[in-house]
Every structure is written in C-alpha cells, then in structure tokens.
Length: 396
Image (cartoon, rainbow, N blue to C red; front, side, top):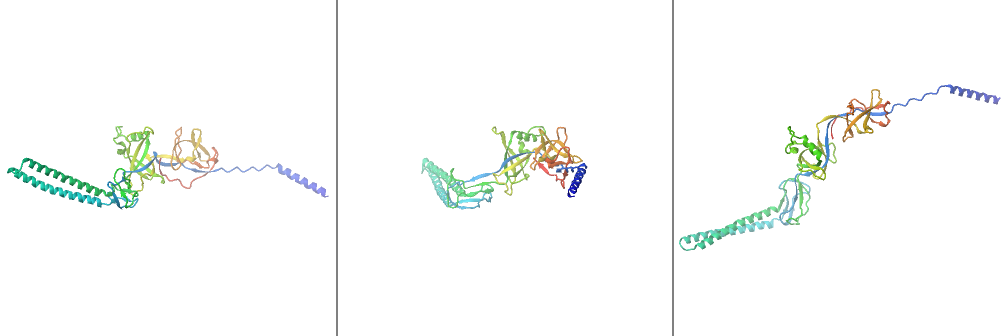
C-alpha cells in the first residue's frame, strides 16, 4: 500500500514539473538609465591677459653709515618702525665736535684781531710815507701782512663750517621716509667713519613701491603695437604714456585683487634669455607690500568680451579632436565637437566654435559628472543644478 502511494506522489510531482516547464519564462526588468550631473555652459565677460612672476622692490633704499667717528650715544628708533624724513636715528657723542667748533671759533677771533692790527699798521705806514717817515717796502710788507691775515680769517671761517658739519654728521638722520631695519650696533660702541665703516641699519621707502618682472621679446612688441598713435607710429615713452594697467596678487592671495600702472621698460633685451625687464608702480600707503616679496602679475592684452566656458573635466579627446557630451530633448547623449581656448584659474575652459563654425548654446545641457556612465546615443537620467551659476568677471 505504501509503495503505491509513493508512486502516485512521484507521478504528481513529475506532472507539475512538466506543466511548469511549458509556461513561458518571466522577462528581466530593463536597467534604469545611469544618473549623470549636467550643467549649462557658463557665460562670462573675459579679458585676455598674460601672466608673469615678479617681485616687489622699493622706490628708494639706503644703507645708513656714519660720516664721522665717535662713540654711539643713543639710538632713537625701534627696530622695524616707520620713520619720517630727517628723523634722528643715531646720535654720536657730540662733545668732541662741539670742542672743534669752539676751537675754530677762537682761532677766527685771533685772526680777526690780527687783521685789525695789520690794517692800523698799514694805515700808519702809509701816513708816514706821505711825510717821508717810511719806505715803500715797509708799506708793501704791511699790506701783504694784512692780506695774509685776511686770508687766514677766511680759512678759519671755513674751518668752523667744517667743524659744524662734523657736529651735524654726529646726528645721523633718515634721508627719506620709510621702514627701517634693526640697529646693527648698540649704544656705547665706537663708530668709525670711512669706506670700510659697517652699515648701521637700512631704510626702504614703502609708498609707492615697484613691481618688477621680465617679459619676452614678442610680448614687448605686442604691448607696443597695442599703444601706437593713430598714424601707426610708436609713442615716445610709449609704456609710461599709455598708462597700461596690470593686476597682481601676493602668493597667499587669489583673484589678483591689487592694481598698478606699468611705467618703465628697460632699454635693451637680454640676448641670452630673450627677455626685457618691465616695472610697474603701485601705491602702498598702508605698507602692505614688503619689498622683496614675490608676486604674480596679470597684464590685460584685449578688451572685455563674452565667452562660453565648461569645466575642463567635462571635455573629452578623440585623437586631435575635442568634444563634450550633450543631451537632446529626450535626454539621449549626443557628441558635440568643440575647439578649446585657455584654461582659467578656476578649472573652467573657454569653448570656441568647432571646425564647422558651430559652438555650444547657453541652453545646452552638458554632462559634467558621471561621464564614464554616459554612452553616446543612449539615454541618461540627468541631475540638474538647483540654481544656475552666477555670471562673473574673469581674466587669464
């Protein structure tokens, strides 16, 4: 009995399997289109420019040295402070120089007294000569003595001037306003004068300051051609007369926030490097720019114009061609050939018309992220930005 029941169960199972095998198989669900981030090409006002590396230098710089010898009596500044023109920086002990002035003054008084006596003697001898009481030789000698003493009076006056000048040199003053360095010597040190005298400190002017950099010969010719007269002739002193502006930034800054005017170009090109030195002037009333600092310079070379930009990472290459992936009205990926311009500091690349003269439209949707998932002629699910990017100014 159990045997027949087992055979029945097996026959039922086999029949069920046969029925199931005859039913059509369920079709797998189609994969969803890949998600990609898209954005419109960005439009900006753009000014073409050349970028250079340069440095800041002072308009004036001086090594402060002593003109007379003596012991340093006082130092009248704080290291690194701003000093004014004619401010007393160092005071050398003035007493030896005051004594020299006094001695030279006393010597002058002696010579002046001798001149008075010589004048009287000359007058007396001339009077006696008219009466036959003195000879011509005596009168001549008296006149020569007077002239000699008068010359010594003038020499004594010059000696006083020299002694007073040395006394003035004992007060070492700032030749111009600027920022002073630290004092090399301390109070009490002996200061020597002469060519081998050590530098006491240095001063650099801070307003204005210069920005210096080198440009190549082609750039120089291009700048000069930009600023010709209406007759096509180069202007005299073209660079300074043209008031060519430039922007610059310190190494820790962005977006070239500072401006200046180019006002000098050297008189010859370096034959070894093919470059020529250029200088611009910048105001520095707050002392923000320190001479010797490195800067990045940007010189505009065109008028402002509107350009189209896309992220440089959204541009693909096919041998010598460049293209982007754009979406049509059905979100199907299409290839759009382009020509590329300069890469800007923020990673955006200027897009130019392709070989057929066609360019992107501000209304196009360009794949910017997920490019690896997008396939040409296949649909995608676009993720659009919540708000369009703001239009900004740009320079390169």
